[in-house]
Length: 112
Image (cartoon, rainbow, N blue to C red):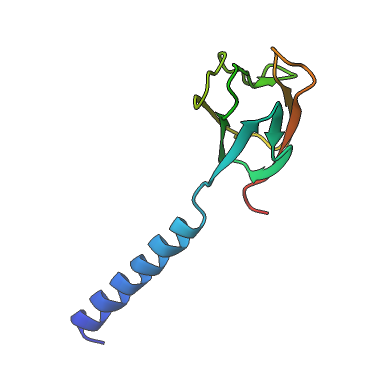
């Protein structure tokens, strides 16, 4: 096999590895806060994914984990709060200003 063929095969293998790694990258998810609700109320993500909450209401809201894994400041209209989930599990949360507003993030292992 010539040196050029070996080099070309190595470059192809590297390109395949980069494309495959890119396909496994973390994702971003959005939860909209509107009309005193979290929409979607339950979101399933993979470990390493980031969830961003966006307040579309005219009054402030928070995003507060029931186990204090994350907590936002009071978010005014169009404010955002993001959190990256690294550990699989179920994360219940609520608005500390309006406790009837609830939601859940389910985090699966990254390999699933």
